Amino acid sequence: MRNADRGPSLTFTRREALTLGVGAFVVASIPLAARGRQALVRRSIPVMGTIAELAVVHRDPQQAHAAIDAAIEDLQAVERLMTRFSQTSDIGRANRLAATRPVSVSPRTAAVLREALAWAEASDGEFDPCIGRAIRLWDVGHRRTPPPGDAVRRLAGRGLYRGLDLDTWRGSPVVRFMDPGVEVDLGGIAKGYGVDAAVHALQRRGITQAIVNVGGDLFALGESEAGGPWRVGVRSPDDPSRLAGEVAVSDGAVATSGDYLQYFSHGGRRYHHLLDPTTAAPRRTAVHSVTVAASTCLAADAAATAVYGMAPERAERLLRARAAGARVVRTIAGEA
Image (cartoon, rainbow, N blue to C red):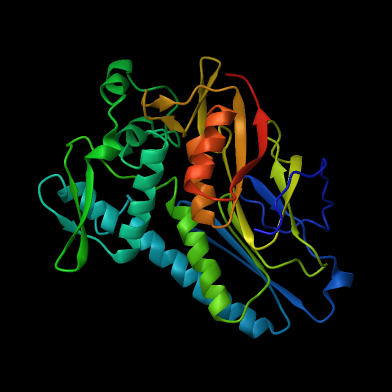
């Protein structure tokens, strides 16, 4: 990543702001006067439980549209493989069958599982891709009250990632669950992988300037047409219509984890979707959000999930161990 630094307080005018605004980020547009003969082609689609937003800068709009088509195909392919909401996806089949027998998965799914397990090991379970049962129990998108305490406690402190075995059989990857409590959910890493896949699809078709944003996991390819990094505004947790600051990004990724993206409120407390595997409950922390910059969106996605609520010194050690050059570029404090 060439540039991803904390900037001054940022205000984009309505004319400056792209429609790339789902999730934690808003992206500054290219001023019309600076585009010259370049076209800015944009597309938004629902995918991976959120909205994917793509913007390509190219002098040939047809080539830009064709490249975006290819990038969307890759995003949808990743979703088909890694969603937990389909019984026929790799993850859906594993969750149904891998407690009783080995289940074959695609090389792409195996690669993401391998990365997820490496993040789990390095973070001592602060990041755990195997807590799908707890995620289903809390279901923050639909609940309005917390689940029963005894049900939560039964899922706490399990270190479930140690119960996922990833192996090879006859040259193909297979998974087996060695702990019956394992249920895989790749929500903390698969979107980042999908963004990287979409960016590679754009590059294969000659695109050198683009933004891909999937629900707050964002990669900025090349420089903006105005010259210099893309300006990415981080939404305020207290008022999503306002910005808390900015990061500047060229050829790199940023991802944000926060308690204001998916949550419900009950009894004066916000219950969000970022669960602490040691308690199987939403993490208690005096942080609203953390934004991480990294060279790949997979690393930024996993890192933002792992370090949310983590002490700064420990977060720095984890990033050094798992993602060289990655760093926390913005933390927004709240109330524990």
